[in-house]
Image (cartoon, rainbow, N blue to C red; front, side, top):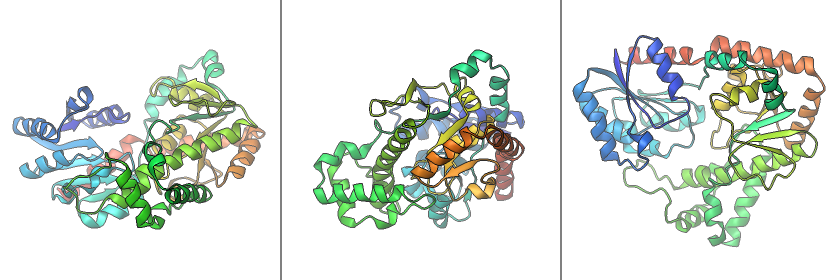
Length: 394
């Protein structure tokens, strides 16, 4: 079996390619998006067409959805398989989503429920996973120096989203009403975990102002739904919420505990955190997860119910995970046994304090989370599920 893997340098691509190879699949790669970030849809389609014409491909695969690939595969009756790892993915609003030869796997069940009705036979739900074998190789080679260097009471690895916040670029041009409404909505949403109400409660007036204020607001003709509400809620307000929430929670924790922050974002607003710079995904991140007493996860609110890649990776490294509550967590893990969740800022502070003072309980939970992840939530298992679904569909 031969497949084409269309790459754009997602961090999970190497792991998925390796599993496909281990399954006996011949994996060809198209890397044009990795070397040229200005690739046009026609260039993408042309490259994929060349591969289809020159090989007997079982399917074309990508991380996230590329409409140009979908249209090309549909033309040649070749299955196009993609797996979302992000939310939002604006390209899912393309009319290409409805193509017959799509095989689209979405990791967030709320995202799945939103898009599934538009192509019910070819859109599926599939949670993310991790590469336990890769992490084990790094962790087993850790030295005492590594444990000292990467260990901390509390660690957070990730962006603060301050440099990625589209809302901040337009906020000064919005009316006082809209700025006040958005600020109030953010503060209200921060008090609620497990349910995202921003999309449903946005007034049309606020949406229209956000759309009008940004000349680069995502607009294109090839869509089957009006995307303004979805993008205003998730790409603008959702990203701003992520920036506010992460800074507020990390700032509050740093008043009481040793907090190591691994990020390329500007950390000047958090003077009491230990700004460690970035952590290499493959070589340093697993050491941080394994050596830290508590690994904090703060899920971006545009991921409404699903489990982000960070959750699977922390557990796959044998780290203790303290995360915000997500509705899908109980589907895969037992709270208080495999991982721990917080439901408010004060609850977060209280649980950090508790687990820093209960080493045995913390280490027991970390071990349980690792064992369950290694047994049920690896890329080998997820891709086996995917291929089983594909075999039934084909």
